[in-house]
Image (cartoon, rainbow, N blue to C red):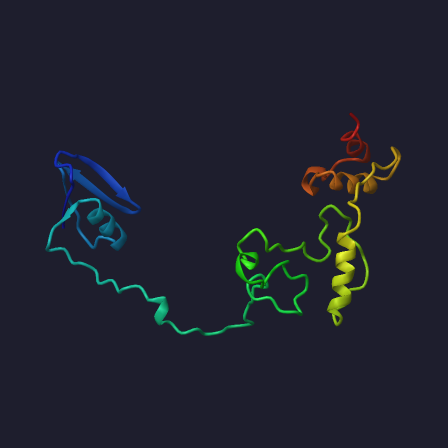
Length: 190
């Protein structure tokens, strides 16, 4: 197969993955089947491909509008788009008509997930699986509490206490790994 470069004076090697084309004065001879992707690129870039070359048959991509849905597993539902009364901590304003209920707008906001650390300590307690109203009330009451501010432990506190405090101040487990109690305490001695 002869491949003609748009630059008729080009001499050099072009590599497309494992395919190497050796051009001399704008023409490359290639033995074998040119990979489909390379062929498409060359044609799109203005290279001429000789007409004797065998063109691979490429099936048209499937049209998704003609496909049938086969449900595997449980169907997912986005509570911001299709809220149900039984949803646990559903996004605020979800399901409202107009722009106020636009799931991609600024008015539909999802609260943090259950037991999320955020700015408050994780609060232990019962999880009311069978009473959504009671669970929501407990979660909302917890989120309305004053924000939590950790205080530094005493200088002679345990390594574990200093480690836990460092985590509340933005340090990561990886950043604290292997440090002694005194090294952890010294992170906060300015």
